[in-house]
Amino acid sequence: MEKTPHTYEILAAGQKWADCVCKSITVEAVRATGQGNRTLVKEAPSEIHKLPPLPPAEDTTGRWLGQPGPDALPAPAKLLEATKDRRRFLSVLGPAVMRPAPEMFDAFKDVAYNVAHPNRKHQAFIGMYRADPAKARAALLDIVRDRAGRRVAWSPGKDKADKGWGRALSWCCGATVIGYIAADAGWKEYVAELVKVLADEQCTGHWGPRYGTIRIIGLLGAGDEAAAKAVLGVLTDKPRKEHGDAKAVAAEAAGRIGRPMLIPALRKYVSHSYLPLSTGAAISLSRLGDRSIIPAMRKWLQRADDEGYRGAAAEALGNLADKDSTAALQAALEREPFEWVRRNIRQALAKIGAGRNGL
Image (cartoon, rainbow, N blue to C red; front, side, top):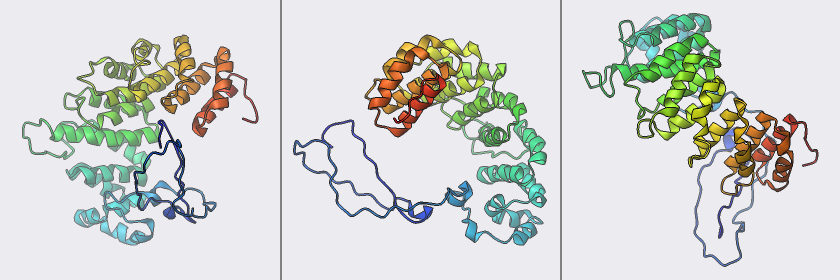
């Protein structure tokens, strides 16, 4: 590589998905010769096979919390037997989450309410949902509502004053995990509770799971005024108070919520230097029907510094169905090297009734 930007593909080949994992990679510096960017073949390529469909996520999940692979799970009867004793059930909690049954619901619920260890508690939330979604809906909502820990054993941490990592922050993290479950299930009544989590003084701009809370509010809060106000608060907070990543997630959430009151706050981020924030704001403005971004999006189609801008511009112009941008999109399609951006451009052209075949 003698001139940037430069991209290239690394193909992982094999006969099954487990083969397509990077085992090692070697980076070697070579002397520039003035011949420009080029590929030096250092080894024979592997044979590329047609792979089977992607398996369920749990078949390829990592082992961060100690879950065994699907081939090493205990028998269902053993998992059910373990529900009779909390200590025994905790020893098989990971496998139980992966192989849940309705009969396990009460055991999961017991852990969720009475075990303070955050990871085990979070696993129990997921287990409740997977074992019996109907029962989990009310129980998980009750857990989110118990910030004070009157019914739920939140992790006390080391600070008795409950500042920093303590009960409230344990509640913040747990509520975010539950929020993702609610988003998966479409339980819109959780929005009001997640708005409270976002507003809590312990859930500051320096708190990582905050990004998840914002994302969930966007996923569940379509048309909701309280959700819009919560996201607006993130977008309008001073940068030192609110991290740029939180603002980027909020910009994306704003488009999902769909309230016009968010347009002024989003407009000021279209020209921001942080790509996830600027592109997220642009796409959300297009979802909100704000045509003021069209000139900027046409310029983005010509940006050579990052294909993210070009892909976002195509998506935004498609959302706005801007017929006057047809020529700019067609020209961009002719020169675009990235397939995912080309796909966005084709979709935009199709939305405005100007799709072209053969490109």
